[in-house]
Image (cartoon, rainbow, N blue to C red):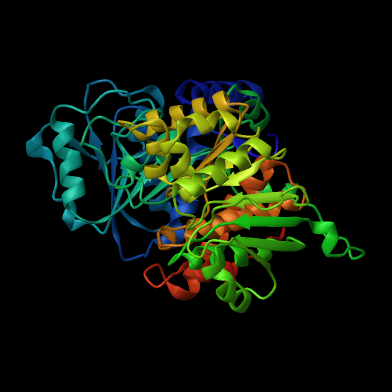
Length: 495
């Protein structure tokens, strides 16, 4: 998708560096200077003139970045002490050039040379870069341990030292960075849940790499960010409710009608023209009073859904929130999968039914969207040892069953039938609350009803769901945030 940025692996990042150097006819040292200036510009607003800053660099190009950053910060009047973690006698050429421009660097060659990092207010980590592929050994382990134990603010240059770029790290010796400033693109490993303690926050800075070259690289990993709004279709003034589709949501059971309320309200907020909810009888009065904009049809059963309503007149259908897994409800799901001629949005108990009756998976209409959280997904495909393994299973599931999987997590990932994986960048920890997933189901169903392709409905839904959560957190904070706050903050527009 041309709209969204590709995420590169280590080899491709190096190729992008080399291509840019050749095309722009600049030196690798000049590119290092550009990266260091971009890093400094990113962190400068966070610094105070009175703070003491330790820059801890290694012997490679990441260390070269660090020493250039130390020099640039000094020209701006900051109190900076550079440290060289000398793993070997010879420094990389560009690293050596920047190191020699500083005449008071402290060299660390053994455990006895490690300073008291608690004497500094800020630590800038530039020991290892994205090329690391094995656990850190020797006295450098102790250096990183002391950096972490100092309990100071840590800013990492490109990637926290000890973290692998493309794989789940198999070591505990990793810098715990409060903020990582990554060059041009985030690293794939930033999105692995196992690395949450090491990449607490991150942002990217443009260092001048050739974007055309980057986008031409073969990569099935994409960054889902604000660029996705470009696919939004303007809403003409000369339009009416029939112009924006009619959605049906089948959901709810006794004690879980709130899930239907949340999905329905979110669906309406997404811009759908008409919404009908299908619920057990116990939900009728709740829906009519809580969501007056929606029409309500009830099942003959009081506590859960036992029949499939007429579905031919609807433009999109979502099923699952609070649904129940009774055997009669299982038959409803089976009948729906068999009769639907259009992609479905499948969530919660509808996914659990698929996990319990795996023969039903083969009936999924092409391009249907499943929106499981991690436990629901593991029930569907089996447990994974690492998040990278889970992502691989997600891609395989999408390809095999020709469906879209929205795997909900801190960085929600969307897999397409074409074999692409999209990592969402919006959202926050306050959204880890009951009902948040029901809201997402409603948004995606509403977008699908409006005529967006299943993939665009999923991508737009996930991004704007997270963006609304971010807006809501600004008002409510993380701890007090509830699912209704997300709906109230939802605004699906380009601005």
